Length: 139
Image (cartoon, rainbow, N blue to C red; front, side):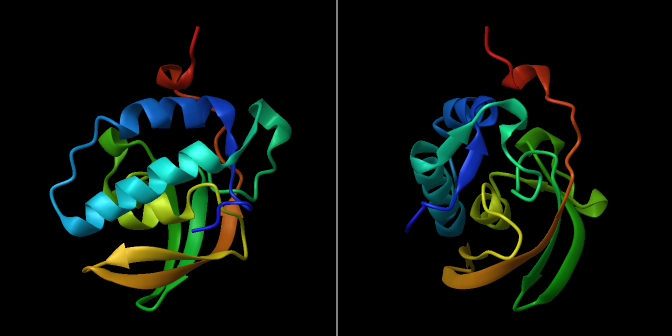
């Protein structure tokens, strides 16, 4: 997959790259998603702090997406331990979360669902919280 358009905040990328190697996926879709995210983290263009515009999906972004299953509104991209689909909090390590992370409004990207390649369109990315979890800050 090409990652020329993927843009990430450096501090998030460093933290997630450290975390992704610790993941032990149990199913094929999850394994593919984790490998995709790892490759994306390694190849994406990196930006410091506020250099990256808010229309790129980052941690804490609120997104509206369209899949073959319909629209999903107000999904927040979060760390795995904060994920709660009942509260619309989607893990960045999930199939859809890893697919859209680092992409921008208007992009259509592939994701793995039930061992098949599906597509998701990023309709809207809302300004994310300015809060950066302390776990993302490196000395």
